[in-house]
Length: 75
Image 1: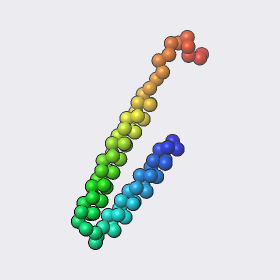
Image 2 (image 1 turned 45 degrees about the vertical axis):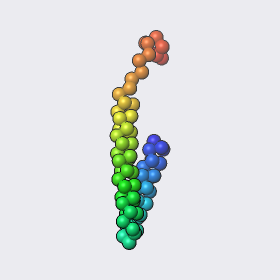
Image 3 (image 1 turned 90 degrees about the horizontal axis):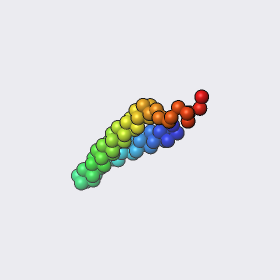
Image 4 (image 1 turned 180 degrees about the horizontal axis):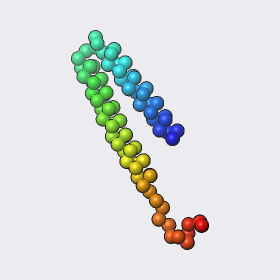
């Protein structure tokens, strides 16, 4: 749980920094604007993939049931 909160905070901070960079690019060279836009797009794609993997892991975790023989399980 602590790790998820930390990751969420990192995502917020990174998104804010990317927005700031984009806003600061108003007078920047076209190549810098393109590079920053690509960086933001790549970050969003990586974030989407990470969130998908995180959802899948959570689904698998809730669906998991140990399959130990009955004599091994405490009664």
